[in-house]
Image (tube, rainbow, N blue to C red):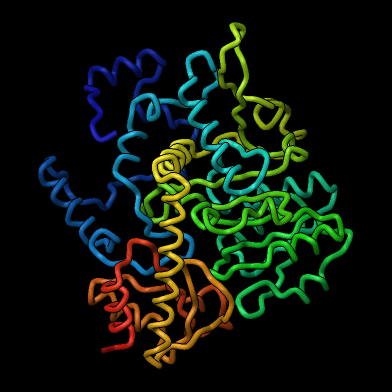
Length: 445
């Protein structure tokens, strides 16, 4: 809270009520070695006016997409979010609500979640979705756990073209669950089918592939699903809700689970978060799905109502019997996506996705035309693409920043073999003039 109106007398009364002589008594269980002695090296106290001025000056040092033209993606994108989204999610029935355990007083929240689940199912082509996850990375790890629990196997294959953060979280989670994670390489920006076939066996629980992947490239999900199912492994598709408004739904291409980060619909970049993860699967796997599910039913008067359903999971049963211990989510962020999708409609989402696709294609073409850049991969892509340059991406990005633009991502940080590879994102917000100026400055003109 920005302002806490507790007086010294009120603090003393609270301490007396709990039987403590001072605030220090609350920490009496800590060993002396863990208690800081002396004075913290902090600035002297400021008045409220001085403090607000100081904080605004510090905030002014940030580079943001409000004051700069953004061509940086790599998992977080500068898409348009109508102002009405923030207005609706700021209503008190949403901002003050928590877990809707009491359906009789939580119908609005429950219905909003149900609508969100329905829209996710429609876009992913799956039969059931949960009430959201923390983020896209944890949804990938949870999908792997569900696959291992369903198949009674403990090897997971993940494409190296999956977002590095998603792979890192998967590795961390798997290391504590006795799960072996093997990475499958890429060729021309998409999963190397030969490498996949060489690693498939009856020990594999899941094959995890992202499309559009971290390079922006589109994978052949149908062929990959067929390969996974050939050894009776589950196929997990990592995707993007906005992209799915124009791409074929993974569920209709053979995916058993579809997960991803939902930031691209209704959530601002927020300096990297908070966002939310979506998770959808088949009815067959529904009872093993982590998180909450809101269902539609009839009350005793025969009227439609909404409830939390299939609750024999996580916090409701013994932890050792739960397939997952995720027992919360980012409902407010998921609500923002539901509001956004309902306002835009499928036609509006398609328009935003098509503009992102076409403007990215134009941006790549213009960069290559300069002769200073060359294409890294030849296949189809969505919103994002990779180009090589003889100049280091950092040098290009520094030049762009000096001209009021945020440049692309240096892929060599995560893929050392891709030296001087530059990942550029172009969303529907970018104008032709902005793209042309970006190309001109990137070339060094």
